[in-house]
Amino acid sequence: MTKMPTTGRTAPRLEASRADAFSESVIREMTRLAIKHKAINLAQGFPDFPCPDELKKAACDAVNADINQYAITWGAQELREALAAKVSRYNHMEFDPVTEITVTCGSTEAMMASMLALITPGDEVIVPEPFYENYGPDAIISGAIPKFVPIADNAPMEEERWKEAFSEQTRAIIINTPNNPTGKVFSLEELRFIADLCIDHDVIAVTDEIYEHILYDGRKHISIGSLPGMEDRTITIGSFSKTYSVTGWRVGYTLACQALSVRIRKIHDFLTVGAPAPLQAACAVALSLPDSYYRSLGKLYESKRQKLFQGLSEAGFKCHLPEGAYYIFTEISDFGMSDIEFATYLVEKGGIAAVPGSSFYSGGGADRLRFTFSKKDETLEEACRRLRELDIQD
Ligand SMILES: Cc1ncc(COP(=O)(O)O)c(C=O)c1O
Image 1 (cartoon, rainbow, N blue to C red):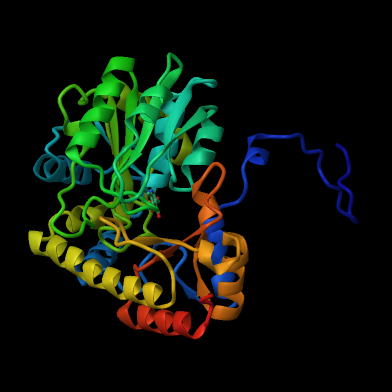
Image 2: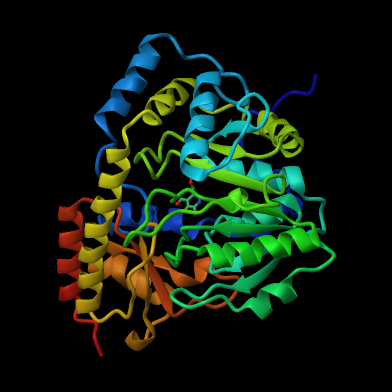
């Protein structure tokens, strides 16, 4: 047997891998910087207030009831059954909990597993831009070639650009409504237009609907998978993270016809084996909360949206009210700094972390910053006070 060296460390030989093709997450890096500089974290979208007491109790009860071993790999049966009932009621879609619902480690894993299940390297995937940061690396890891189409916040879709993006090579399109970072909520007409393109070009829609319950001004959530002809060509992704303020639990899911679910389940099994068992039990309890819970959630975020919007506007940021989700995507071109310079200045000197706009684009976005308002009122008030004190207006 070769003797292991007892002193010194040698670097292993590393060849280029897919990990070299993308950078670290800027959003998560901003959280690390917020901690380092003791800044208020308006960068990463997670609440600084507690989740509902019922959920905390349900999680503790599950641990105490010895639900501490692997759940069935595609998710605890009671959770899949509760999801099937919720999705029928809220999203107007029918899925068989036995074969068509897969519980994952957050929507992050759901998206990655879906892409790996769908893509043959070299396939094209349409990604509306700006996009949630993860979709870029998801495409690279799965071997897809991303094709970007613009989504303007607060303006209609440029239909011609969307039509041009679809080709013989297009395998899938990623939809995210309500949208991060723009706050756009896709209308029924827009979703019908996308659905028609998917049907005409035999393309699968992968739709990330993590903010489905965070909508403003009376808007209603529409799942593209509920539109005629889309039932079997949509993978709908959901998550407990945002709706129930449990981003650290890492429980999400996919809804897809059996043929797609068989593939997603295989990838999911070998990626993670399964999502945390006691938290799956608690998530089943979350789905039994009354409708008033969702109404209060919408109202809560509507008032936080107003607070941050006012603070940013008073500090000289150009912005508009988002239609859904919990971010304000500001324009910063008047301030004479790039997004990276401004975000660095803000976190180091201003005591506030925000996300540079360029992390939501394949190129461009240097004139934007994203702020989240998923924080306690006191946190937002202090952030607005710090913004006013910055004296950054030209
Ligand atoms: C659009 C979108 N998708 C997915 C995620 C990650 O969700 P999860 O915690 O379910 O993995 C986020 C988190 O901010 C998000 O904004």
